[in-house]
Length: 194
Picture 1: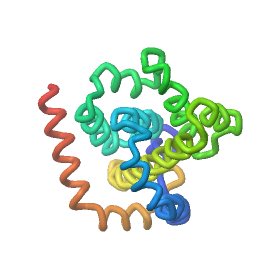
Picture 2: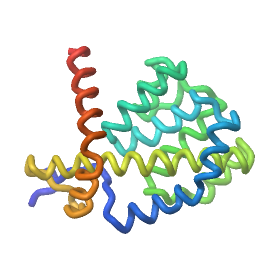
Picture 3: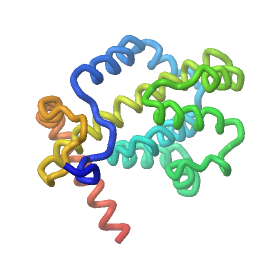
Picture 4: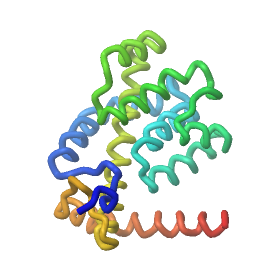
């Protein structure tokens, strides 16, 4: 099969999903603390989420985090430039975190020590860990969304190159009510834009 006939977005299999999900679930108390602490504003959090989503391309996460970013006070222009992986016009205080989020996604969760050290130097270790947790959370969401989308893509003749049909089916069965609602909202938005 030719390369262009594959679903190109990164997806999960059972093993990779449970590995990542376990890491995030292990941090559940830290997640609550990060959300309540105020160390990272709602706007900054959503910009970080969008920087990861721009790399992975999950249509569900793009819709959800764009809406959340707008609700938190981000402008459409800010969202557009982050989704274009262009941080030049972003707040200089946030650029390192956004670039790190992008780098984390581009390296499949294996950022360089240099990038991590720069993040810690800019924000301190506590805030850097908060940023890393947000990145890991949105990574799980993006890859789950892509895996569900890959299942549908199989029926259009474009399976994921390294996908797991069984895991895609598993996710689709357990997530279909949520997926249907999101798909309707995404289609509704697309009609308004046209």
